[in-house]
Length: 507
Ligand SMILES: Nc1ncnc2c1ncn2[C@@H]1O[C@H](COP(=O)(O)OP(=O)(O)OP(=O)(O)O)[C@@H](O)[C@H]1O
Ligand SMILES: [Mg+2]
Image (cartoon, rainbow, N blue to C red; front, top):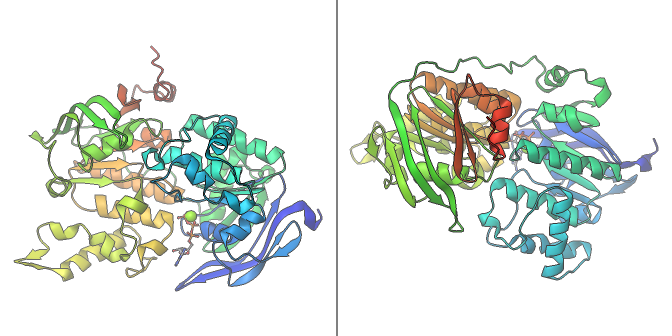
């Protein structure tokens, strides 16, 4: 292959942050028309490498060639002009703006100025090609995470990117939507575009990647053709250097205790004032993990927020251990032992400008045991923080690192540590393993199961059927704000659940 056959070549890329070498002498070749999987565990340096390719960071050392020519990029705008566009792991849309406005922002970068109406038409057309619909006139803040991500993908496509970098694009998509996205990626590749696909899901890699590159601790371990990979185990070995244990160490409890949560006819509105949860009823008992399956955007977020009391309830009742808590404040509910793991750790879960230690103990100050009279026992708080950080293997990240500098997976681990590290009676977990590598995923699931085994009730909201089936003792499916079925884990089949997720009841 001659140099010009490569869309991109990265040579000897090194990038250091204070105290961390995020990329160390990394080479990466991107062929025209390939789907290239970029893999590695949390903190391996994937996002950093792609932030460099998309002009967001400058490497300390190394060179980048686009179609054989050496380039220097000083900003994402420069990269876009060279045809390189990135879909970020954490969304970059302006929530207050409409979809069409967000997509138009920066369109002038590539020299195209279109009317809103014309752009809206383009958006609808492109979305249709990708197999979904999106209303160009809705406000981004009103969209679910899954919908927002689709807008991000449309954004780079409509700017004419030839190299499209997707940082964990499937983590918020449901199985049907993933299949649709994959078809589009394949089509784009067949048109000669190059795609970098960062994912933690190895079955996805096996399904669509032509080649993969694995990073570990900032270094490139190797690049393989799809045909050279016999099974996902080969990839696991490269990623972790050892054979990781994807299996769960804990068993889902079989004996259930007293009723902890009872939800009666709950109706909750979305930000747009439409009923997103339309009369939902269920109970969760001690030792029970109720897995709530569903395609993102069917009322899960509103339900989780209403249950954790950060969103108001329109009608219906929530009982916690028999007590009506429908009108309680989130802080009071937390004090009673209800914790909430959000799927949106960036804007809701963690304070980016605080350190790791401060975030771990953030909520502790309200609890008893750390107050001494009027004073807060900082020593105790720091001690609690250190214990949690140790238990959750957060030690690699220093306690005084600012949260904004941690990798996505480490941030999620931190959030989970804080929310289930204590002695919660009810854990509401909304997409707890969103964007997390295989090892951390297994770890978080194990922690949830252990909490249930100790008597906690868990609501596990997930669009990942593997997660639902490996952790739950009861499975419920939500579709368009209604629970279509509550099934016993033993009798539920994937097929049943998958059909319910798209609103089809089969007998
Ligand atoms: N802006 C920054 N400042 C300081 N350190 C950073 C910054 N960005 C990344 N890092 C560090 O660089 C390393 C690589 O991070 P990166 O985000 O590239 O990992 P990743 O492979 O994308 O992980 P994940 O799968 O969790 O998203 C991590 O140790 C991270 O803490
Ligand atoms: Mg990343």
